Length: 145
Image (cartoon, rainbow, N blue to C red; front, side):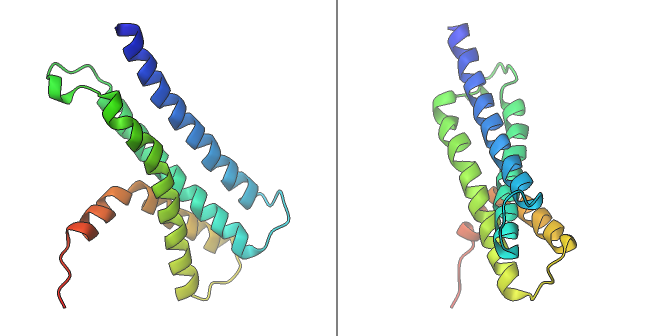
C-alpha cells in the first residue's frame, strides 16, 4: 500500500517535470532564436511557454503542500481526484498565456524589442500562475445587462 502511494506521488512529480521541460524548451527555442521565425511567432511561443511555466510553478507549490502527511483523512492527498488537475491545468495556463498575448498584441502597437518580449513573458507567467483565481472570479461574477 505504501509503495503504491509513493508511486502515485512520483507520477505527479514526473508530470510536473515534463511540463517544466516543455515550457523551458519553448522559451529557449523562441527567445534564443534557434529557428528562423517572425517576431509574432517568437513572442507567441514565449507567452504560451510562460503561461505553462506559471502553471507548473503554481502546481509545484500546491503539490508539496498536499503531500505532507496529514492526520485528517479529508485533507490527505488523493491521486484519483487530483491527477486530472495536474494534467489539465498546464494546458489551461498555456492557453491563458496565449490569450493574454493576443489581447496585448492587438491592443498595443509594440515595438519589436527584447524589453517587450520580457514584459509579455512576465504577464503570461502571471496569467498561468493565477489562472484559477481569474477564472473563479469571472465565472462567479454575475453579468448585469
